Length: 446
Image 1 (cartoon, rainbow, N blue to C red):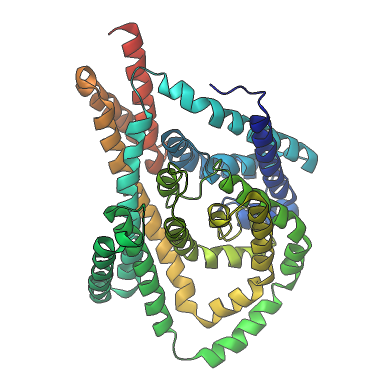
Image 2: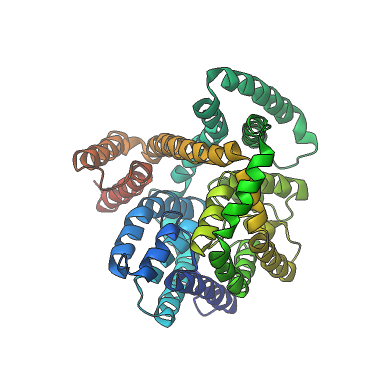
């Protein structure tokens, strides 16, 4: 177990406290949040249409499933913090706090607590008679494969079966070719990882290409409409530009935290980074491939993020999430901070141009709705299948029937109670609770 008074721990606790404190402060001031469902409601808070208590309750309901499913389970499985575990609670703290100073202090306390969690959790988990770390890593494969299918499911929903079949043939062909030939120049990635990253990239590119082809006519008229629509966003955009120094500080801290391996990216990159960071000198091509997958995932959220930013005057805590890969691509901490700050500033300054393009290409703008819907569907499926595999791996020989019974009982009780725990969360929560009960039985000698 790490000594909490070591200098490196104090630095980590200080950086994470500053990061979460700033995130909570931005939420309290109504100029930033991590939860996409909370950001559009921030202007209503200052208009008096919703109280802080009501917004905090709504933020909690929108966040708890992701904190329990991806936040805690990924932290336990891959021994690194993640944005869901840090920033979704910071949102709740920020919108509930009556003053910015209170939000900053409470958010900072949460960040320091998560630093302690990151330091002590691995040792505590590894000391259990029945490990839950290795079983929880079973989440990785089904989630990775589910993510491969997200753009293709979105293509089917938006463009129909015919274009889905054509896209699948192209995507599978390219991905299989890369998977079995690319290991020579992509050192560190196995066949499955190469295939998965290639499927995500090719599927997203094919989806965007189909959408752009649909919008090939009528651009002149849409350009005039885009100019008119941007006039409506002038005041929120001025608010965003005034907050650029705070966003830059946030971007620098995010990139630094990722660079120092305290913080992972998203569900796409965390398992891949876990493998990469086991190597003292991971291949730059390997890390660039992970970054490419992360950036392609970000594409599906760009329209939502930029449109809500220009409508509300509030920006995402991770920006367009383009800053996260900067951390593990940067050669040193100083450059990670400087580039992270610069990326966030450039994002804000380019918001109006991005929105103008989205108005000119409405099918591309609509395609991201299909991508997010497909992402939720496939993530729910992948997380549940991974949870079942985790329970199977968790159950040592004497406890096999008990493990499966406990897991199914927890799932049935949640369904009967009206799903108080979201379906995307009940699988990992069931695994963790099953593991704790089995460890209790092992300690008692049952």
